[in-house]
Length: 123
Image 1 (cartoon, rainbow, N blue to C red):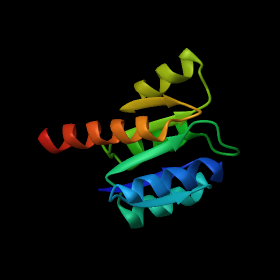
Image 2: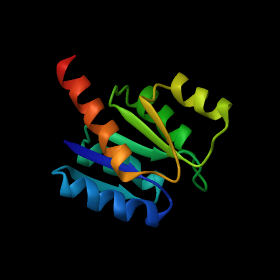
Image 3: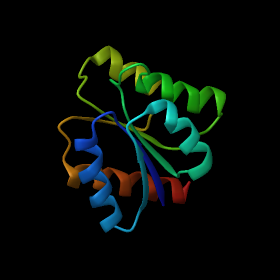
Image 4: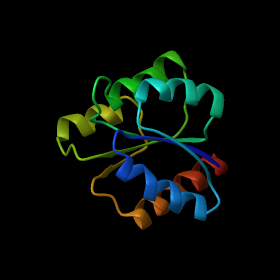
């Protein structure tokens, strides 16, 4: 499984990448959501992990692009410190599959990735 993770905080991406690679996933990361578009096209991930609150370009805009412009049904997990019920609901309206609040537990995100992976392989 190939995973693209986009977050403006390198301190979130580094341990996440290390843990996921230890579990056998191919991982590509970016701190720049605009560069994430190029990576999405070239890397062709099976799962997207994205932060909501990023400077210049929000994770919600990125999700809308993936769903509306790319017409992709790729599973999406949001990681965010934003705990606004309105933002969380908006994410689900845009088609995210899961929402995890920061600070993240690496074990929890890995369990959720496994669950999503099993679901999409059987459906």
